[in-house]
Image 1 (cartoon, one colour):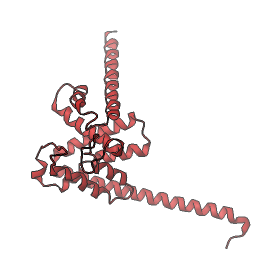
Image 2 (tube, one colour):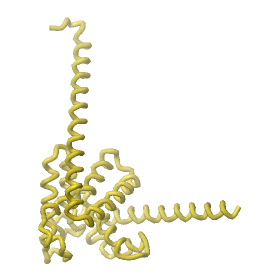
Image 3 (cartoon, one colour):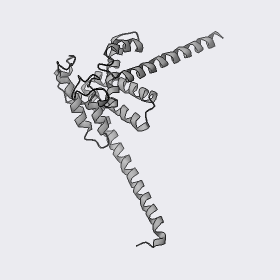
Image 4 (cartoon, helix red, strand yellow):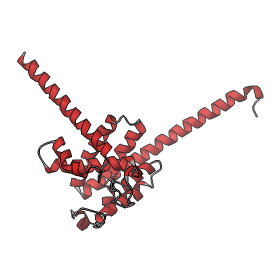
Length: 228
């Protein structure tokens, strides 16, 4: 029992204790999730080093693009996790399926794309990562509605999924030619509005142009300084 006059202080102390307990619980939970993710990434590295390398590149682009879009810290974290885990479902795919390179269309389903559902089911078991699981599940949707697994279109597709779809393809295109980022994007341009969200494509292209301009200015300043 607490005297009425002391009740406000007692309530405030109880709330503060609860806040501290919740903070400790959240920190412990986040550490457990981080440990689980690190173990999954180690398993992916052991299964297929090329996939792991590709994933690291997609993560780097995702983190850079999240800053460009000025996403909230929480959204930046979840986009980064979505990129880091977007191919984790391939841990459950037979090697003979992973080695296939068929392109999926609405009329030509390739079982390799089951990894989206497998990965989503794995990550969906982790508390607080439901939106990451959804991003993984729908990363192979198409902007025109002809994708997998839900035939979602336009803004029905989760934002993180639309971003990962582009960054995943961009990373592959960048490895397929030697002309740089803008040439890689130009290779994907015909699929803008079909596979890729046009707004996201334009924003990512703008970021690449800005980076190239900044690098050019920096190079010119360095050359001028050396000449002087």
